[in-house]
Length: 261
Length: 208
Image (cartoon, rainbow over all chains, first blue to last red; front, side, top):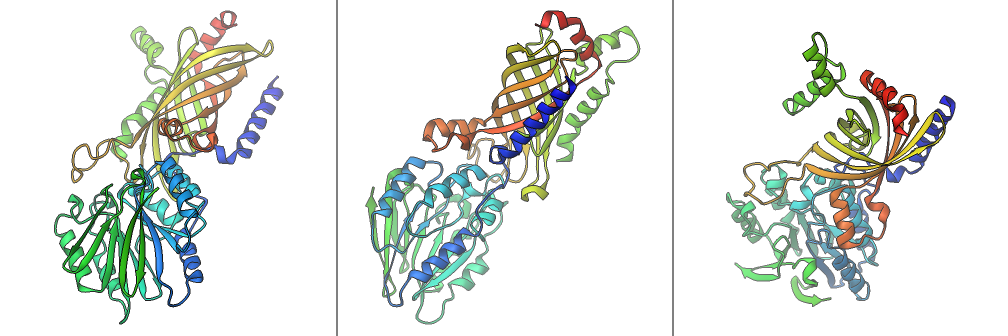
């Protein structure tokens, strides 16, 4: 009998090991399969872009766990032509759990075109920042495409241990060579209480110092556009509003279309 | 963090060593009430890479209650997670495999409290009140099967198919493409402590 029980235990262990994907150590684990997704996708964007082309991209934001809306957005974008990439302006999870990051990745990677993701305040929760770093790469990054520099700036404060965003990196990165302009992408908008303590003024001051064609962000879950001191700002509506922003960059200017899907 | 773990750790140590029960009759009564019936070790199941705990069995052996401490070291996936769990289970099916072996089906839930980065019962003061709900606590319901010896009911191995409240909610609300996305498997071994063996022997005839 003892042998039979021991055999059963061994069989159960083998079953468990063979179902490796079914074992979960903790909901807060960082057990991600993908790595450096942003840099791989940026390489793909750059390899497809021809010199002198105008740049057209789609911005969506705050997908959270609204998967049916994200699916609909992916389907719509896949039917469009002439789009270089999709920028997801943060909050791709509710609680920064690796299971949520995985779900987001598996849905967004159904796009026929590359996508880049920036971190939002919700994505910081739990071990979210570490998972984001493992899965997508650094939270501050940029890439040059034609005469434009896409600058992705992590300006989350509270969920980042109430730390000041890396404004020095932001300033240095926006200081583009002559003839180039930037598009600044971040998650927290300037009216949010997170950016009190002078952070909003500091961020806008930097944007106004350098040639920035457009600043896009999420977090507000609404559509909003304005021009302040000759700089344009766009709040990308959240995915549940079934709206996305189509942004065309040509001759240092940005044209914005809000598309319903 | 150390202080938060001192009380459950000491309770676990005292209970495991049956420190509650030694000496006079009153102490023996206390032992009956507080001394755990079994010690269990578990692999995975949202409690960490491994967990260790103590448990109690109801008089009619239909209900179990236990507490565990689990640990996920950073060497596994770069994050360190401490988890304390309270577990309740109900045996809904008893099956006699042979004269010496039993198989039970049971269901229940774990109440998990985890300590890791950016995970709180109460968020720090710089967050506005009610900005987030607590993200350190979860219910983790499960279905399980245990197989063991009828001679010592407290000694058995078990496999549980579990989920997390939040995964279940998302599954129902958003209809994820794969059910396997929200379930997980774990396995454990339970060893009877002294009084459990006694009770098992007393109740052996009634159990089946």
